[in-house]
Image 1 (cartoon, rainbow, N blue to C red):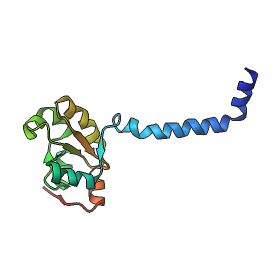
Image 2 (cartoon, rainbow, N blue to C red; image 1 turned 30 degrees about the vertical axis):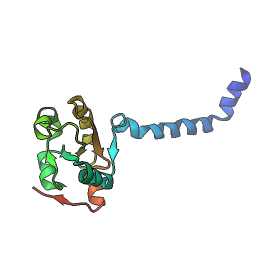
Image 3 (cartoon, helix red, strand yellow; image 1 turned 120 degrees about the vertical axis):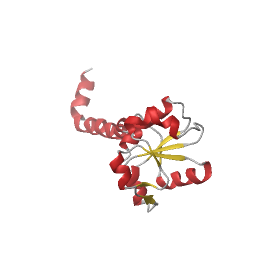
Image 4 (cartoon, rainbow, N blue to C red; image 1 turned 60 degrees about the horizontal axis):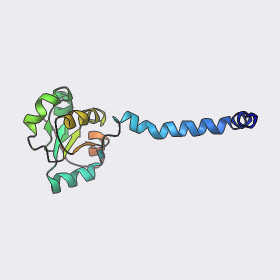
Amino acid sequence: MRWTVQFLIDNFVLILIALTSGGLLLWPMVTQGGGAAGVQPTDAVQLINREKAVVVDVSSAEEYASGHVLGAKHVPLDKLEDQLPRTVKNKALPLILVCPSGIRSRRGVAVAKKLGYERVLTLTGGLAAWRAASLPTEKG
């Protein structure tokens, strides 16, 4: 027992570093809505082209008007539960949720899954990552 306490005292800094690094590894999962599945912009383009994925922008009306993924449908996050079934009727198609940073879209994943959509993804990094990849956007 004595050697265990002495070990903890002697290696306090190392133990603290190990706990901190473990916490930092878990942090993205905690902040991303429990590990909502994400898709990189280039992979999203492949899903759109190959599997007819539907892109739904969950931004506010002002954010959507200032720029969004080319062809994205607009359903604000606070109206997602009511409007998504009317906007995207085929629940078997991949659904990619987008917002400016990717935070709100992660919250929308749970709503879409609750509504019965089979494959719901969030655009990792949001519209900012889409633009950084030089992919097409439109305004209005």
